[in-house]
Image 1 (cartoon, rainbow, N blue to C red):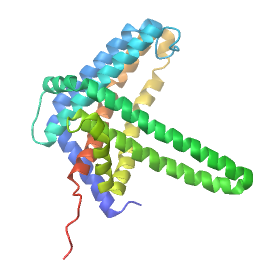
Image 2: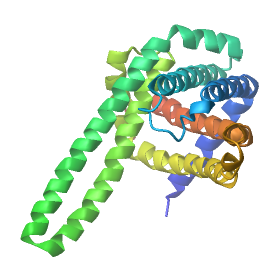
Image 3: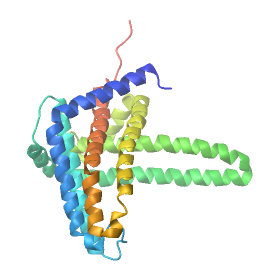
Image 4: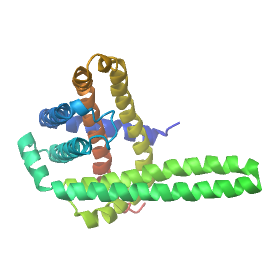
Length: 278
């Protein structure tokens, strides 16, 4: 069970995130709805080749167009929302146009940071997976029963490593997106934020991840029920998928961005040194 301190931290963090979203709700929703509309447009332009189900080799140009289009729009949405949340937390409400203008000016930095830090995250995770698998195989060849225990330990270590590297990558990207650090200084900055109160952030990261996963599951359930529409008409299926899941997608994006930004802002508020006890 969670400690009272952690329960209080979860409750207060969610309350802070909700208050921040309340302050910036309108421009946040405008950015997200506009971005989703843009993604729908790109998807519909490519619908005759159905990039969702066909392999990239069949129609490489349109698949690349779809991937780049959705990627650009998603990065602009994320950066704009983060700047809206950052200003709302400071008591300043900016419009979606101001946020989008600031996001456009940082687009290439955020794109580079996203590619670089996500690549590093998966590289670390793959190297760990390779080493863990090799250790399990070696132990299994020597003493098969012990490999079960080692496998359980490796699984727990994998969860710890994934959450840690994910928080590090997210904090680094956020620092670049909000203009606080450049690409090369963001990772050391993220490390400093994490080490101040690591286990607290680790627990909150898992809890917030489960909350976001719950909203994501709602979107998947909606899409599952409307899959038969694809058999009637591909265009109808794509349009229904996007339009019916749009509210859940917007809610999920707001929840995810606000909760993870609360972790990021909370890490910055944590003092590096505790006052001496009398």
